[in-house]
Image (tube, rainbow, N blue to C red; front, side, top):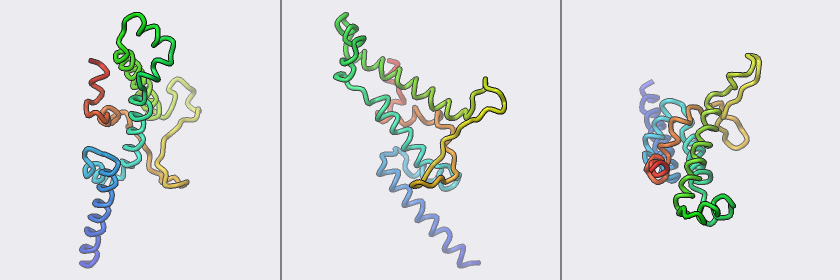
Length: 158
């Protein structure tokens, strides 16, 4: 038994170091915090981080002024005197609200207005093609925190 006590902490330490480095490589602001939470609470934090980070990169912040100006409504707003930066900010805010709504719906896991015997849904971590069995829930709690600008979406409502 004493041997296990010596080996186990070393294995945990190696896992913590490896996951901390992965989270650092992903750009997490507190890589060790994310790694500790995943290992101590068995929460798929790396998968949660990657999912939420991709919402910011692809959905919320992925809009450029050039892309916005391809939309006739944005063209009309700019022609009427709105700044393209304001138009993009409004579009990003709408994208955030839509992403948050989808994340909340995923977190709820069911349509509360549907009959009790209706199916629900869940989002689960995978490794390759294999389900790990770890649910990715409470995503709405961390969406704002993962704003890559570090402003927690503050620039969307200024």
